[in-house]
Image (cartoon, rainbow, N blue to C red; front, side, top):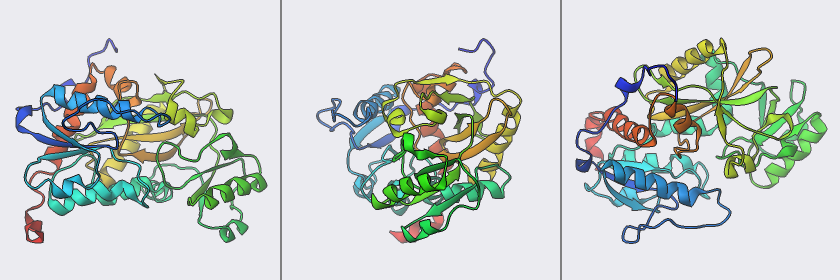
Length: 346
């Protein structure tokens, strides 16, 4: 923990009466209401244990928590719920990431994250970069590909190339072969992803390391620090197995004078897309040159104790419970009083 006093301690929101706030916790492995034990599902990257741990944190804070593993649960909650805390980020449905927030907007229940249109922007790694460039945040050059025919057009920038799923969470589809020196090699990798049903984004590889910037909702946003997800892969890339199994973990990382421009980036993104309850801004950062390349922002970030947000929060004396309570309370305030003009819908 940092020896310096944190500028954020007095800005962290805490519940006045947690028991009075009724939360519906929705996650793929949410505990069954009358059998609240951790579920197991081998090979799913620790998600069952993570979902149970967040349910425990919400309960220990004192909120009145109900839970469901159905993404449609909010539609049928009537007036029994004050806030939906959803960790649903992966479903076998196109653009599934916006489903729960859209359901909540339909029934006018406050929910975790950001509005569906901002969530949709965050989930599209290509549109995210176009938006970022328009507000002065530097990004790698890139080009999207949707089908085999489109691959006949080579990128208008040189390699090395980095091939990824345009959508998707947890670095889905990224492996050692994602980094290619030539277009011929990148084209083969891109075609394989397309044949798996993915839309592909090919980018100019940005040298350096991954650095993620955890941010909590506030005005102005609270940038907690800079975290390096460790990688032992070629090119220091973050592959799907490193994201899912997290064998190397995270470390706080000093980006030197670049911290000033990253803070400016966060404020620009907030002004364009905020408010948001919490997020991470992900970069490639070159320690040799100090150059940064913005990759994406994440609105359903990992809130586990071993993750980047809790690690950065601990530098400010914040516990996991402090962070979880803050995002709930900020989400409630963010959405208070903004739906009166929609009451005719139901």
